[in-house]
Length: 196
Image 1 (cartoon, rainbow, N blue to C red):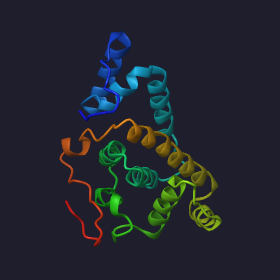
Image 2 (image 1 turned 180 degrees about the horizontal axis):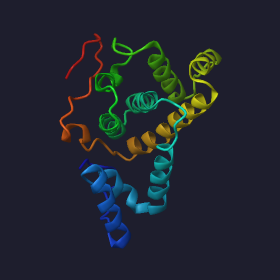
Image 3 (image 1 turned 120 degrees about the vertical axis):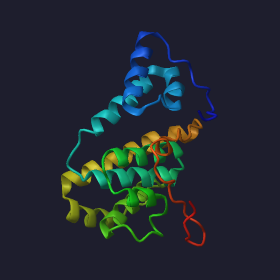
């Protein structure tokens, strides 16, 4: 477990036991974030509920949404979200060579022009102030369609909604990707060379 800024609470009671059993069955372990958010169970359940609803959306390609979320996590510095989404990419049978390269998407040559546009859009939405341009939206709308564009935008907004509090609370990677034997995520360097 990471050294969070608010120590993880003990997850207790019937509700806690049920939650731990359900999460362990799905993920193999209870993430440290759950203990931190357990201090305010309404917040925990709302975040989890929203995340579950997002998984049911299907207007936009799953790989594009995953890479966008990972691009936000990398940009904001949320190691938990980056690691977890890398793990989820594996579970969704997405292109793992691409997923591994998201932290250095600008330097990597594995991405299509559309994937690059999506990750650029994700970063532009994550900046303060937001730096999205009319041209970005117009190009993505033409390639994805309006329904997928709205969904992608909402997924990126959700990524910001979850990454920023994790960083603020000191919630870091729980090592999901390493636990299932995935190669470490690529890291950008000043010279553009990947460190592993």
